[in-house]
Image (cartoon, rainbow, N blue to C red; front, side, top):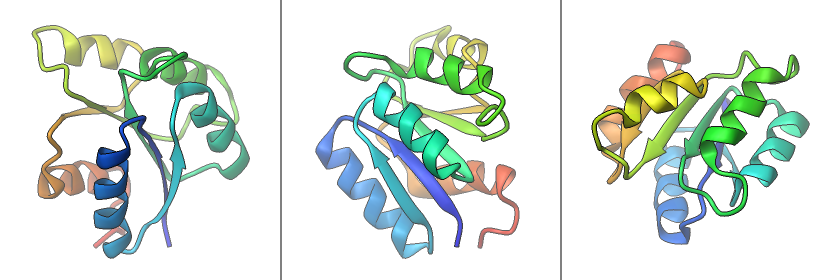
Length: 123
């Protein structure tokens, strides 16, 4: 089973996405802010990270920079999840080190396509 880390502070978004991913066979690890996301990523080394960018405390941009700067976690793909759909937001996420970008509300079929690009063995 593939492990995903979902870093999301909104409880409704977290619960909805966790259930949908678990139904698709993923083990879903949860973090509610950037610092917790860093800790969980280093401890469990997930196969992929879904990173909300607007997080309390350490935001998703900085958390991603730190993940990509750490040899232990730098190879883990990070998909940014954000309600920010303004011009330049995608580029800002990619500059922070995100490997892909998806906007909220999450469309699960679209997100699964992006996940499969990094985890091709996922059905």
